[in-house]
Length: 261
Image (cartoon, rainbow, N blue to C red; front, side, top):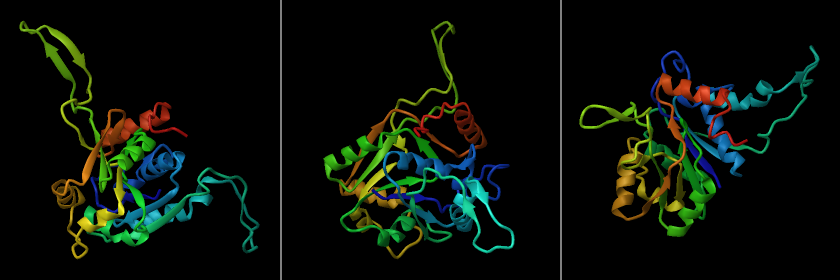
């Protein structure tokens, strides 16, 4: 199943880390966050990607065009053309990546519409953002989507609270303290969508200002064509320096829930 990843927005700049990078290229460990997302999908058997590019698209293209030389041992003979040899291999050999230029200022809905030509009318496809990680069970997500026969499935998640939670009795004695617990009241859109080709019928192809999470989803709600898959496990976007540091710490400490490879 093809995986469409939204990588084109200006996004939230993480000062001191992403000043000169598109957000999907901000590193977690030695690899950009978009690589982690792709690796997660690939490990579950989904190796064909469509990257919706915009802001600093050349940085993303250059990374993958030079991927093998960047991570591998090499040998060359100086002065001899075409002498370069890659001396080892990697586990991403079967990744197929389509780099789709979807416009510098296009909003999310317009970016999705612009990759319609790369999806067959008979295809169901995955869709996610290029700046969030999760351990969502993709097989269960796909099964749920197939079970309801609607146009779109979104993953509903419980984000971590911004601050710690305190409970106290009537005298002020603290009875419970939880450091940044998961919110339990209601879910938010965590990305990790599954969509039928009919999704494109709900997006106006003449506008670049269509916001997928606003107009498109509202249309789907009104048409009763959207369903929620509940995910109660790990989910974390990368919008701030603190979140970037937290994800890096998880990865370096080998406690990253998304690292299943």
